[in-house]
Amino acid sequence: MTDRTGERHAPAEEKPSPEEKPKVKEYEGEGITVTFEPRRCLHAAECVHGLPEVFDLARRPWVRPDAAAPGLLAEVIRRCPSGALQYRHRPPDDSAEPPDSPTTVHRTPSGQVVMRGDLLVTGPHGERHETRVMLCGCGASSNQPYCDHSGPCAERDDDDAEQR
Image (cartoon, rainbow, N blue to C red; front, side, top):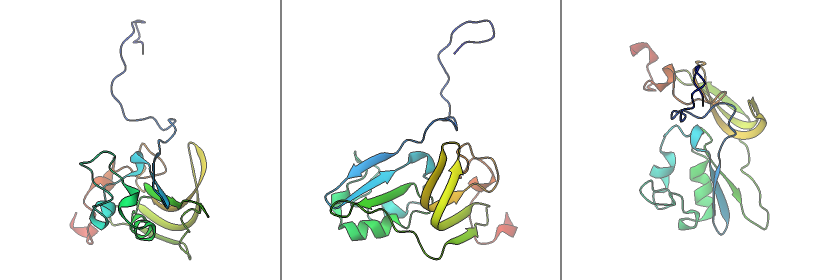
């Protein structure tokens, strides 16, 4: 990077730009593959609480799909509200997560829009088919259209928004 005098400097550590393609990590197991998109994780901890033998932040790799039955693992992954965790069954059918039907949409007290169903989300990288998303409701996210808790939605999400 150069400054206005033309001098070169090492780039400062910054958040990934919206133009940067999302990074998705894959963890393959015998009957299921788990995918994780770190920028979408909002740390709801449904995974860690649901199956600590599979999801352990102190271990590398932190996801071990074979530590639980594929059906149970899929059930816990579907609890991830942001969609950062997803899965697809491994052969013979290699199917992806089925969407909820009917589609549901609700706004949290802090402003995020939570959607579950057969979704087509348009963002800086084009259209993505999704089954679960938490969209930014305040406009401050650097990961548009997804929430990244960088605006008012970083506040505690409790049942009584009037008390904030």
